[in-house]
Picture (cartoon, rainbow, N blue to C red):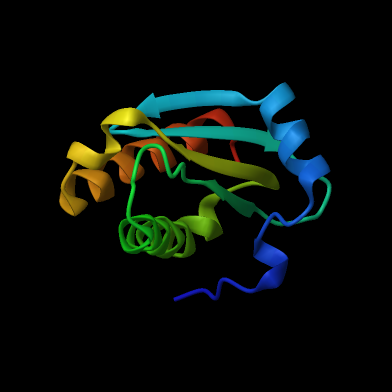
Length: 117
């Protein structure tokens, strides 16, 4: 399995702002995925999981862990893109298996939107 090191994370607020401004969107399963091309040379992941949607920190951390693991498993098929995953209000009503399935659909959509050259 691929690693999820510091280089694979979006850390800069300007990068998040660029993604929010220019992104292609995909929304299902309690999550919204935003994608935009980057110049870094590899895909990067950013997470924005709202306390408003998942009250307990343990729930938010579990969701982030699931998203990071899923991203790690699929990062080799992604082009040079920045991906931001946002939670939606109905994420708290989803089981982990439903979230995994939603992420699989999102990754397929992202792959189709950004064909790796």
